[in-house]
Image (tube, rainbow, N blue to C red; front, side):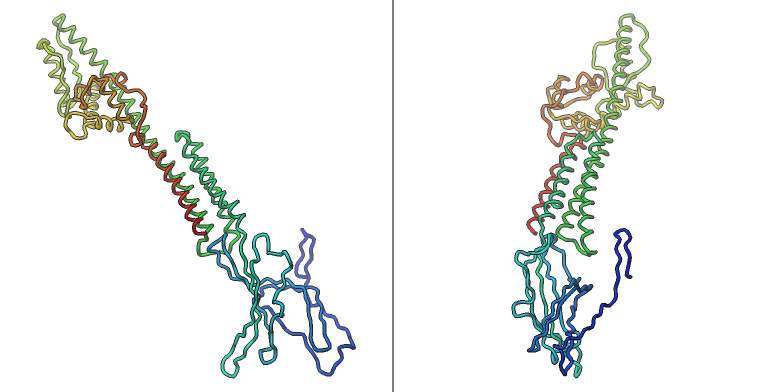
Amino acid sequence: MAGIDQKLQHVSVEGYFRAEWTDPRLAQDDPCSLGDIYFDNSLNEWYGAGSLFLYPDGSVYRSVRYNHVLRCPMHFGRLPFDEQQCFVMMASYSADVANINTSAFTNGAIIIPDGYDGTTEWELAKVFGEVTTEWFGVGANRRGYRYVWIYLDLKRRHSAYLLFIFSTCILFSLVAWAGLFINRTIAPARVTIAVIPVLIMLNLQNSVTTMLPPLNYLTWLTSFLFLMTMFSLSVVFEYGLVSFLMHVEAARDRQFEAFKTVASAMKKKADDEDAAVQEHEFHNHEPCKTPLVFPSRDKSEALRGTAGGRPAEATELRSRRSQAFADTDLDPAQKLAKQIAQVYAMFDRDHSGDLGLREVQLGFRKLGQYFSMDQVREIFHRLDVHEDMLVAKDFQRLLLNVHAYMPGKAWTISFWELQPSLQVDIAFRYIYFAGVVTAVVVWLAHW
């Protein structure tokens, strides 16, 4: 017994089946033998029932049912549009050309039933045969053997591959692309719709590679699946970059919110000190001792008051404020004022002392506020600045009352004026779609 399968309740046995009988019609003086025809490229053989006919003229006809597994080298570079040629190689095992002349039937080496065109996966495109003489050995031992070759031209039926693998791959690549239009702040949805296509691509790759032998090269289909997997993975990495930029933008926005709180506190303190100065002018009391400092056109100079004609005490109070940055021990209000001076220097990119429209726009971008150029002009208009240049005292008014001078929603905003995370998201939508379409066109052009 070769084996027992208890699950299927099968038993396998092997051995030799022999039969012996006497037929007087075969009686003759010379012995005869059955030709030892073998299949040279056979890997596994099975023979079933058969028959043997002898005719008075010495001709013999033999028919045996068989099932052979044959060696057939294949190349899958153009999968699923590949065409393969398998062969059957037959010869006499012991008789050379001097003793036997092997040839195919006159009506062809193989007879195909009408309507048969192959299997569900392979189309039998053509069958033909030839007879060759192969020589072995050297010198006096050189012998020739006759071989019958039967060639089977096979053509893969690619419809199922295009429908269930190629098309599915493209559709899920587009699913990943559609996920780029989901609001980038909704992380669970973005991550889910980015990861699922990757898993689908890997599953498609496994379904194809499991049907193939181990290969050291890519096929038409596996290379396309690999490229689509890379595209799908790029969506995951893209959202990682977008998330990083969103964290940067959130940090800048927190700085701006803190700055507005600082500006409000400084405005309140400035209003309180102005009220104290006015009270002093009315009652002729001692001036307020706590200085409040604002930035000027450079970091080393404080903003000076613009009101004129005040008494000497008020002028002295303003003068003391202008020297606050030189003190080493700053009170909280002075430290906050110094921060505003640093903000002014951050806005003043060309160190000219005045701020242009572009400088104000870029300065607000550093604080997490992404205004269009029209919105920046609206800020200038609310500040009653009719030129495209903002001086230090106007910037001071802006910072001390940020809420009052902030613009409304932009009617239109260009791509370069958007948040960096949104810029990456929008740009990647076009790059991804163009890459997928290009890949599909190139692969279809080379099928």
